[in-house]
Image: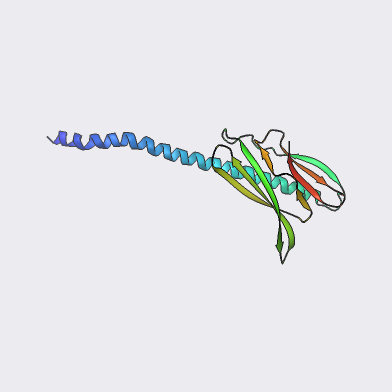
Length: 159
């Protein structure tokens, strides 16, 4: 009688564990994958922002009168099999202490997922951003930079 009572209690518990454990693992792994993709996307956005900032600062020296070059992005073409797009917009920002500068907002988005991240890059008054988007990060993707004789620095995505 006691063994039957134990089986009546333990069998439903075991059956529940058979169904609940895989569901819990599936949810936990899905969240872990999403977190990992988000971190990789943030790292790619940070690297892209750094490349743009370094390109601008390289050309912003007064000894460079005019120049043109491309900087390879060197980003991975996909993040765990998902292509991503980049979008950038430039806007002027005024500050009483530091004067006027421009901030480039760079947003990367995973295609096929509702995931994006934004990084901000501070540039000087003489910066111009020419185009706003690159798609799928081809291996030839780059940042194009042109310094004009009037000290204006034009930046854009290229391929």
